[in-house]
Image (cartoon, rainbow, N blue to C red):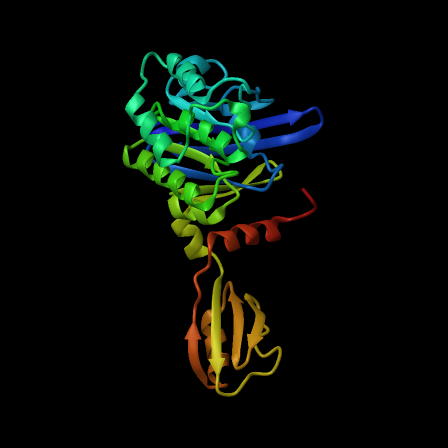
Length: 301
């Protein structure tokens, strides 16, 4: 199994007749940050719940640290932390008491100085009762709980949900520090710029099926290109109608194109109109993600 921290084989979950996920095959390597992308209902949380043995698969297998998630959950959970997307807390319990309780379950591994540092960095006061906290502060409770024991693996479901932008950046710094320690992060997020900023690889899931897994770098390189051409003589509409090229707009003397193939032929055609400037804006992970969904869409979610 090598250095695979997480591995799934044909992982499938059905809720009655409704598919949750189907034949999901993925690996997450030691020391990497793996982003799991997809809209609500795509299967992200279902996958994570199988990994945590909250639900059992209908078929297939999931392993963490080489151990079966459904048979060896206790030793697995000693080495990981899980931040669920829907965090349920004890309303009358103080946050510090809650964190003490969690620490007592971790074989005495509590590092109170690190926990205090996390609270300080997140601008969080842990001395109040849960019911007194805003949504963002409740999320901070979950973040501190997930990071404070320095686990070998963090499974994070929308970790920055409800947080203001500055705190979101702090959470991303914490993720980078986990990676720098050689530990592993598996997380889902709707905030694609932060995924692009910290992830080594991403998996894109749609309607329960994993449709692409690749490094962020390779995804952005293999994706379509955007080319903006500024002309002395503006080409007529339809001048660049050809396979692999789509005109997406015009601004004065500039024609904006999306190019999947045929770039040499495009430039040959464009030269006839006297090109004055060429610009190739960077394609973001968000555009790639939306492109995958547009191309594979065959109905609603």
